[in-house]
Image 1 (tube, helix red, strand yellow):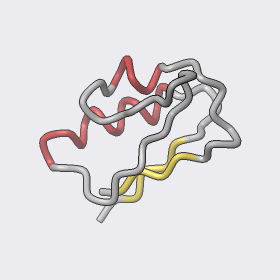
Image 2 (cartoon, rainbow, N blue to C red):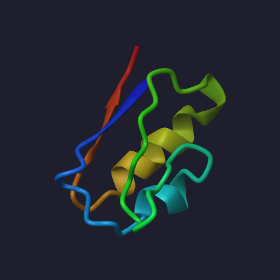
Image 3 (tube, helix red, strand yellow):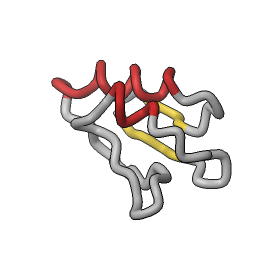
Image 4 (cartoon, rainbow, N blue to C red):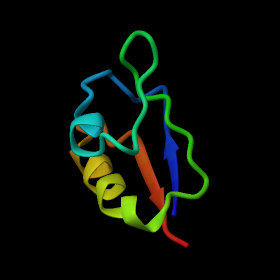
Length: 64
């Protein structure tokens, strides 16, 4: 599983972080700066929940 964040769409709500605290990373001003090419299997559910929580749909999950 891979996570792709469209930084242009992110508005800094941090809902991704609330749903996936072990997956998502925010920059110094609160925008999603996550870039993971290989999400460990035990974090897949957090990654999916975080992506679904994004009101701007700025997060794309690419399944293997």
